[in-house]
Image (cartoon, rainbow, N blue to C red):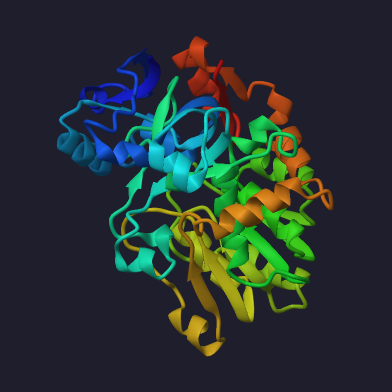
Length: 385
């Protein structure tokens, strides 16, 4: 079968991924009893994630990919973890216990949780201590077929969710998880970093009752999209492309936010960029007693420039990773299917640009054209025939 793979022999010498022939997955319960709990899925649409972009440009996940491939004695990884697909074969346990059958339409949780560790046993499978990540530490869905555990799958109703949107329920779930950490009803909110998940956060925060939403980003393009999604105000961060900003907060941005929010600051700040400066600006922009949600990811040490401000003003910081399995999925799918707002339409019309230059045929994958697209749009979808 055809699959979009990362060849680890090219990690240092080339960027991107290659469409190539790889063995087709199969279920063989006689040889491998664990296959009884798995399904073979034919992808219909798959989403290209920020994680995939980091792999494409060799910015992240090297150790995780190399270590897992060494254990498997392989030199390539099939990438991709955002999936909408059709089950074409289900193992015996998958059928009897989960009720899956050929023809079922599903999406998937991207973190394959073990079900045995302490976190899994107490309901925190999203921080499983022995998890695998689809498309990174185990083969993913940028392929004609993918084999996945039945316990990871989420049924999807295409009569209520359009397929291009259904394919990106997983990243939307990141925003839903972030917005679920605190009660947003009637709250003022600032989103620091209006990339893909930041844009989803704007939509979800509004759907969950936020009264005022401010988008903060150095990119005019990102802020324009945020305006189309309905933010109440945007603030552009001044940036010098030749310099990495230090940890000190942007006091001008923080002051503008405070002025818009009773002179005190927002109730909830979402740090979605992974910038040290953005983190400290988010803290400075949050009112006493407010909350800072941390989703932006970056390696290395961070500096909190005014640590006592957090303690003396009773500000709370919450870190978010992945999605609550499957609580977040339940909320996300209900939000998409609800007729009470235009969440689904805005994702397709604005973030996916109605499919123009954002939906690409998998079988006709062109590396140069695809790289141009992933650097120009917040979200790209592959359509599998």
